[in-house]
Image (cartoon, rainbow, N blue to C red; front, side, top):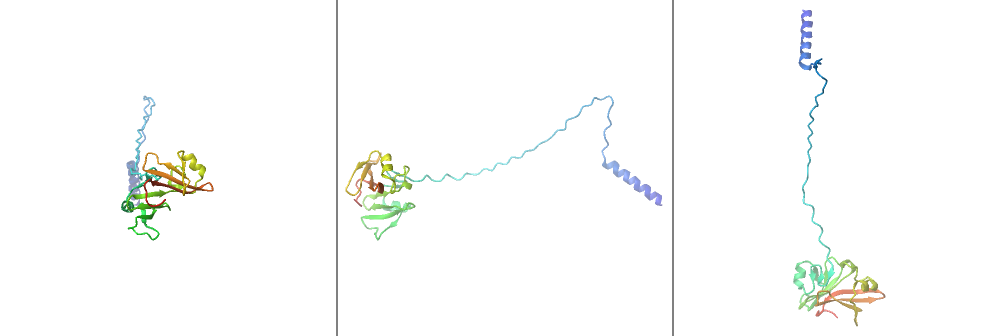
Length: 193
């Protein structure tokens, strides 16, 4: 019986080997030696993520002949308040006053607003301009950038016409070679001298 168990085990092992091995092809003596290229399949997966890039930041507002960005000379107090361009009335003023002083949001500067004529004047510093002129700049820088300056008085040093806006002018005060006042105002403003 032992012998039959050994024969069965050998037969099973040979059968398993026959099922799992691939016989090597026998070379044909008459055939020329050529190799068959193996086809290679390459799969490339490219993933593109499509997103909307963030919009560019809004353009920095600057002083021009009509105002500061969206804050325009002549704009009504209520329109400027509603657009969040100016803060509430400052320095003990009341909304019923003929002229009120307001902070220009985000600038550290204040603007006068007339009940009758709207935004009367807009003071500015160099950060609010495209040319670096404003309170704190040098008189030399002012003269280099504003070639149409005229002396004025008694409270200010120079005035310049606002290009393209005959209803406005730039006004500058100078002390010791530095600008101590710089603003654009309506020619007919009724809030200050």
